[in-house]
Amino acid sequence: MEFSVKSGSPEKQRSACIVVGVFEPRRLSAIAEQLDEISEGYISNLLRRGDLEGKSGQMLLLHHVPNILSERVLLVGCGKERELDERQYRQIISKTISTLNETGSMEAVCFLSELHVKGRDTYWKVRQAIEATQDCLYSFNSLKTRKEEPRRPLRKIVFNVPTRRELPIGERAINHALAIAKGITSCKNVANMPPNICNPAYLAEQAQMLDSNYDNVSTKIVNEEEMAELGMGSYLAVGRGSVNESLMSIIKYDGAGDDSKPLVLVGKGLTFDSGGISLKPGAGMDEMKYDMGGAAGVLGAMHALAELALPINVIGILAGCENMPSSNAYRPGDILTTMSGQTVEVLNTDAEGRLVLCDALTYVERFDPELVIDVATLTGACVVALGGHATALFSSHNPLAHELLNASEQSGDRAWRMPLWDDYQDQLESPFADFTNLGGKEAGAITAACFLSRFTKKYNWAHLDIAGTAWRGGKNKGSTGRPVSMLTQFLLNRSGAEQGE
Image (cartoon, rainbow, N blue to C red; front, side, top):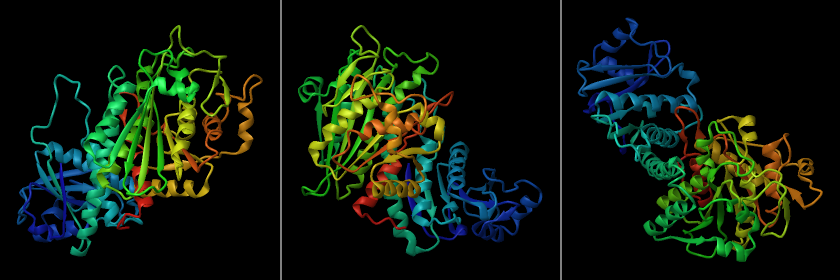
């Protein structure tokens, strides 16, 4: 897919299709008014006849509009002008791209990027439009023997900006959006892969591919033998029931060119989570291949980072593991010694992600990090609390939490801060070990974060629980690619890269 920006009048566009907005009730946008004037009232006459009301998402494709050079004009309903917000804008773009892809228009000039969206500028509108376009056109069909493709798919789209002065801003938005979209696609492809293919070794291969493709990326793989030498007893216990070896992939991105402290991203990589001895219910268990969504998100963010070539040092950790029941699997009642030396009583083997992450969070101390962010599909309780709309954010460091919340708002990949009070720590008390791996039925997402916090005392830390946002379930199940956009925005902000906002 090819993207570009230009600044021009609609009547001068010679394209397969021009895309313009219509507001409710039957109100032409400024660009649509220009087309209407050139076509001698052709468009307004159609609206008076009731062909389009302007409700959000309505589409009307016109052919051979009088005095218009382009073959087609697509009128897009944008709802009420004063109510056009970020969410509605992205939905409109997605619906527009789906429609264009079915019309046979292989290219289009889109004027929706000139619409007024509350509090958003050209950079945001162009970048969001491209991210929404790539998301809309994404499909995972590499394992299908019969692939259904549009006969004449959309291949090129030009976003119009109001003035020539905004062309550099639009071009910067394209560069950022394409890098982020590559990262999101990388995340989706890995997460959607079935668990018989995507195991910890496959995750390691994806990390090594980044090493091969980018000069400033290097990768190291930590195997079970090395984990045992390091004393990572908790991590090793979780993978003990699987024939697939646990592997932790360390991806180092050296963009600063000096020895400045790295930012560290740690992703939970449970390539399949059966629940272990505490076996999950059978219904929907196929979706537990997405329990490596945190690792997929970190991989995607590292891919986007390498594309952007930002001047910072970042380390991405993919904590690959598989949780299976077997005669060798760890059990409820076991007491594990973590890499930190702290002991954990296992109450439920399905609370395994925190047991993998705690050792990974101890391991990263060796990098003397400026900060650490872990990303994990950690708890069903998080889905109950926030649904599929917001990622849960926990942090022991207020400035870091505020940075992440700001990045989530900028990117549209939203997060919501949850409490991390000491009051909840009591739920982890154990009579036999330092603490348990389960805090009971109440506040499950919070007690899981409290568990992780016990291993992060030596650096500034944040935890993102993406259990509700990493994938969609049901008939149209699939990875969402979140939180790649938020993480990349955070790295953009950290690097001081000009945003154009």
